[in-house]
Image 1 (cartoon, rainbow, N blue to C red):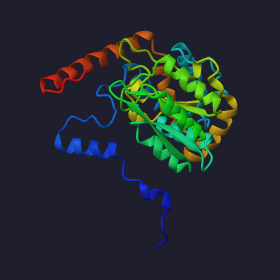
Image 2 (cartoon, rainbow, N blue to C red; image 1 turned 45 degrees about the vertical axis):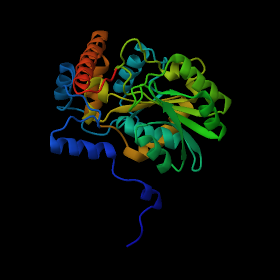
Image 3 (cartoon, one colour; image 1 turned 60 degrees about the horizontal axis):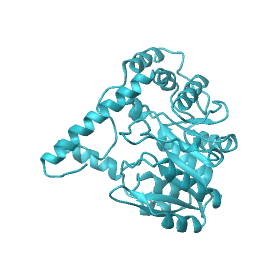
Length: 310
């Protein structure tokens, strides 16, 4: 039998999915995998029932249906993102997982180096390696998971082609301040590097923190590749809908990668998800309140068992 690709030898099964199976097997609280424990909003469920009756059963436009991208662009701008053209700045993907691989393969050549803050969501290093790039790890230091400016500068000085910034961070929960993001941008500009952001938790942020769209920072748009997902915001992790946002020149290349990876995201789900993108601001306020209550209950439980987390 021929040997399989040698680059796979360093990988093992996803720790996240393995821990989910073990938690299910033993009836344990699952802190490994990020999926909400509540149903999607009623508007999405009703829209899904309607879209399932057609006419959305064939391929949509490869990089996302026009109606979905238009609604997505409006929602992004409404919540502090850059003003974008849905025809030039977006690729609809099968979740943020595919979006990250598309971004990595669009930005990097084999042999390039990619900075990854650590601890990190496991796909970042894997995506870099599968793209032929080499990860450079820069620690986020507890308890607040700040980065050391000198450590980050030294990482960029190694010739990094890109840096991955997950904001809010998975798994630390860190929300990068605007000042921190501007420092990252300054280094990226100095070394002519891409900033690949992953922002699926943008609406799950607790006071006094606030989420900042990296691509909306002054001078950032041309070198930012934003990856995001609808999964956490609308409790539809199984729908696998995400996107890449970038400058037209970058998106033109990202569309090629996306086309050869998955052809396109599910057409009926794109149509149904428009109902979520058009929900009023009150939905997002309610989502934040819900997670604030859940956070309070969880921290109370930790204190009861002797783990004084704050």
